[in-house]
Image (tube, rainbow over all chains, first blue to last red; front, side, top):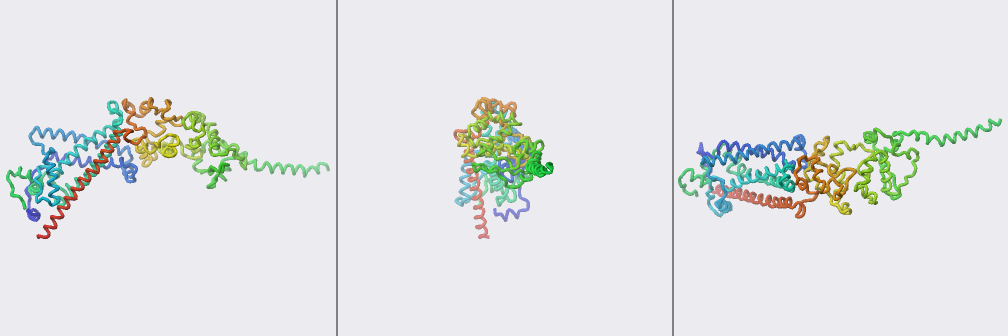
Length: 238
Length: 305
């Protein structure tokens, strides 16, 4: 099960991992996230020289806000679509709560840290999605909820303050900026490492592009899922 | 014979009269160029008995482009100075000098002057606070900075900030510096960005005078103030049509969020102040560990193969 052996194999056996719609959704997320970050961060750091240049480049703050709000609406539509798609997949029996967070994930973190520290021989047997991927998924869910809510509050403060105390408006502004920074830093460190810079997937994990994962990688990274797919117990690698 | 003896007397008298008349002659018919012959020299100052100085150098280009430069001559506002040498200035201090200057402004700008006189600034001035502003504190009568231009509007917060960003000065009057919180607040962000990236366009966001009023400005706790709690929502709706009944509380009153001022904003700040470093530390550590394990495996494998 060495790397040389894997590389020598001419055509690795692939396992389907993502549907076309999931990949399209991910692509929409890439586009909206980048445009929102590119048009949002200059608004947060408006006093910095680079922010001024970006805003100038885009033709002024009004246009930056217009772009930001347009792509925000796209992202909200995508989020609503996603909720609908998950519900539909559940009803059709195609979805079994693979993203649900449970105690196994806490155990997964502890075992993985032990493995990474060299205190454990084998990588933990992760399910279809490991704790890293679940953390990222739920961070996107939480982040989109926070950003959409706080963004809409700032967009329509006159209407919102008919029902809610006004302090929600400046609080939303702080939350929007804080969550934005958290999201951008998390993506740069966590997502870029796990999906791009990790030595065994560099330059990118193609699963989200092709929708398939090599069987070998599934066995290594998601052994519990591998065993479920193959339906047979593998002899432990040593 | 008699008439001949009078000639030198008449001639002498005429010459003497001419000698007196010559310096006064052109001065009486003085135009701006005559004044600017001297007053363009850089660094010309008038030193008052109090040792305070007033700059009397004029930039002719800026003056000509100003509202005053197109309609008035120097003598309109400085009638006494048509005489050369100029008569001595009676003001003993800068404060006196500015009071006299404000009187000159009031000659034409009587509406603004009377509004200002009743304002918190004007009243502080009358009470004798030397730091209280007067006309020329904010308006340079010799400058091209016209109040109806984008430049004047976009720079106005900074102009008010000359005093209202100065913590020590504000404390003397029982006030807080407000400029800093304005700039970091929604309106201030837009205004700052207009100033930086679109100086030719006036900011659509509220500037100081849009809420507080200009010449007629009142203290915020004065019931006549447009930002007094009883009137502030009406002031907001000037721009924010259809603002909800809680809208005015969205404004944090130039206070930096804290446990006492806008606590929700403060708690959200705290939340992200903890969440961001904690998350980054967690994922950063796992990334380093992951790379470490990979590197260790490489070294081990390299040794074996």
